[in-house]
Amino acid sequence: MASAYLTRTPSSASNRKTFTWSGWIKKSNTTDKQQIFGVEGGSDNTTWSRLLFLTSEKLSFEAYNDTIITNRLFRDASAWYHIVLAVDTTQSTASDRVKLYVNGVQETSFSEATYPSQNQNLGINNTVVHNIGRADGSNAFDGLMTHVNFVDGTALTPTSFGQSDSNGVWIPKPSPSVTYGTNGFFLKMDNSGNMGLDSGGGSNNFTTSGTITQAKDTPSNVFATWNSLIKTPHQLVYSNGNTTTASGGNSWYSTQSTLGVTSGKWYWECKGLGADSMIGVASPTIDMNQSLSISQTGTTFFYNQDGGEMRKDASNTTADYGTLSTSDILGIAFDMDNKTITYYKNGVAFITNYAISTAITDTAMLSMNMYGGSNVINTNFGNGYFGTTAVTSAGANASGNGIFEYDVPTGYTALSTEGLNS
Image: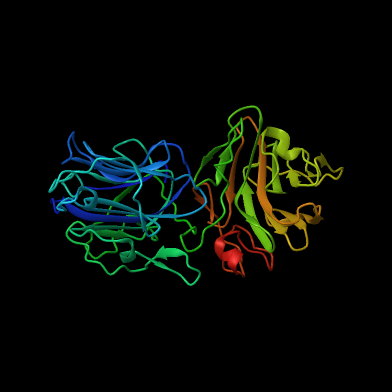
């Protein structure tokens, strides 16, 4: 969401002692303070309550004078978290007044735990602005959200909102059987025309601000992104759910995908390649430190935009395949079974079935390198967007997994958990 958020001010106050918030969240930025949900209407417990990630990568619920902070760290940028906040300040036992659950399991280990007093009214459900995806003008959430529920008047457990699929993966219930109450709501966030539409029956719609894009990436089908957890002396700047990468200065910057492959045929697209850009595949064991990732023998294979060559085994080939402009779309089809890679310029192949070394035997990662300046690359792993711009006209995709600008080659699919399990 980053600079986008949702707001609603209830027309009347309701139950400010007992309520439940539930939502599925996939973080992109893992280190900044980021608010998930809350109100900041004043300077006491009755007007200030919020659920957020801290710069320490911990999860916290804060009233103005009371704070609960997990010991657990939330730094995984590749997976969805189901977070449930259940509040009931009428409880006589302090630790029963605020409960946090993650992926169906209650959190019980806290670095700080100061609970609201018994029967304390909190800011949530008061007639003040309620924010999803930011605080009042700051601490924006950077990532994805879906199936956001708020139940007014009842403290519930995760099973009201989630269930295990046939593979044991915890996923949302499509239509939770709950009583939402006066100010309750259910935001599926699956309506690109109105991401703040309440599907809970109460018409408690939110107002959207900024550009909120509808992603194919869901808790049931997690798509690859670039991995913001890769730490090197020169860090890429990530945005748009870690699908947009920008270099921060005059040096080489490297990254890899959050998902790797051991077999199969995979397709993705990139747009905005500058003069010094390399796109391809590599072993997960390479050293990502600066230029080392493009200088290791037998484990890295890239199309080199600088001269239109293939860079194989740490050196460029002599063939000149031509270069792309920043408005061109580079399609990449990687065949891990036969160890070949094909590149497309605006839907037309210009490097076909290029053989990579058998040195990549067990696992391959989608990889990218760029050098300094104002280089910004937008990658479509199947969500159907380059940054915040949707594909112009989706190409044919026989697998039905992912949305791309151009036709997906027969037998290839988007790199996602659904693709890996097919």
